[in-house]
Length: 474
Ligand code: ADP
Ligand code: ASP
Ligand code: MG
Image (cartoon, rainbow, N blue to C red; front, side, top):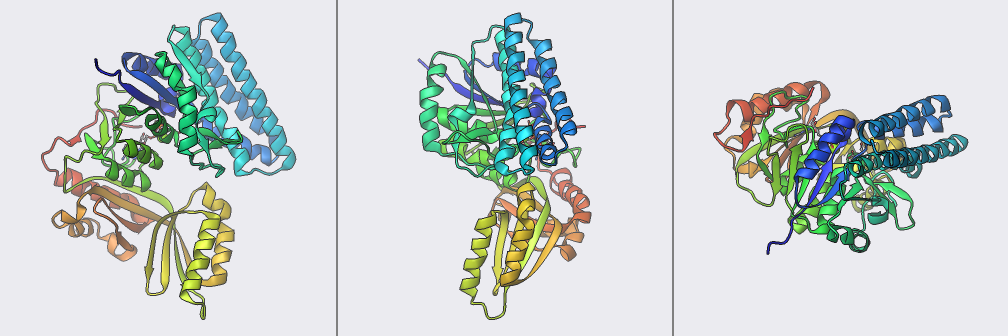
């Protein structure tokens, strides 16, 4: 007898943004006959709202903070009223949302008194997005008699205390999963859990980085030894470029783990960068699918590499800072390196590239909320040990594919299709899967368009890899 398959199905913010979308998601879940772990994000924009509430509270702007909270609560109440007709379930769902509202109000008061917002407190606000969405979805499923159990990811996924970008301890997490989630799956229950959120061993709420519900899905996939991890989103799959900038981007039928990891690391929002590792470790394929267009078979991400020597996608990262450091006169090079790494490990910026030439070092950092917090301190500390230059507002463009070094005239095609690159950029070649270069912000959109047309529109090989999509983002 065949072992019953297990799938993880993750639905992002736009897939659960309102009652119609949630109804549609529940249909998708019901159609799949495997054992299921369903991972959900907060409803769209909820995490942004919670961050805004936290910031306003720390600035004592309580009226504004509470107004945003009221809107957020109303959105959830409306979904409950539209989807949960059963009176008992409706009441239970509304009460739960009320409880969460009270807890957020307590946080608002606390933060406004201390007038300060730490990353730890910010995480305490953020977790409510997924707690509220999962509550609403749980009762919507109960309302139509689905055999579902709601699991609190804070009790399963245990992380370090790097608030805002916490990382799980897989051993402890596996023990929790085996004792708390496996029995539910064995009872054939659909397990519903929140993405993004977790907690430290002491039970303090953490989040694993913005957009990390994909990572949560991959974690649950690895924990359950799933057969497939499905990432349901609002585009047909992984595309040859960001469809917000390239309207005729094509869908990829498949892509390898390694290529996808590069694509995510270098900015493609469609999948969180940490999602590949747990899947790769257990060799579980990931599939990116469109919850608004279930006729598309999505993009399969796996260890299989069928299409070689091809450019597959082009991605970018904005708000890049380039740091050029040269040790202060008289400072021994090795002492300098030690001090430099100490500064980096203290402030923990997201270093994308580090190259050393002669005795100077170039570090490329993607600026985000976290680096902004430490930006001035980091700069002052580097100033003490080096002659330095901080160059801001660059864009890092990365071309991803397999065996790029074996593609005929690869570099030539890049430079001839985009003449502006030469003057403005520093070029780095990494491994055979990716090739990145820096560009001034003002040349970025034209360069992206030229590269897309060069590699996917003009010289497109006849292959089943690239497919037209019917659905485009607004
Ligand atoms: P979710 O809320 O479901 O997690 P996201 O907004 O995080 O969805 O990710 C999906 C979005 O990623 C798409 O709507 C698209 O705008 C963007 N995107 C950027 N680069 C790509 C790419 N190469 N392929 C597909 N989508 C991309
Ligand atoms: N809700 C979280 C965010 O908006 C996590 C996610 O959606 O992946 O960042
Ligand atoms: Mg996402």
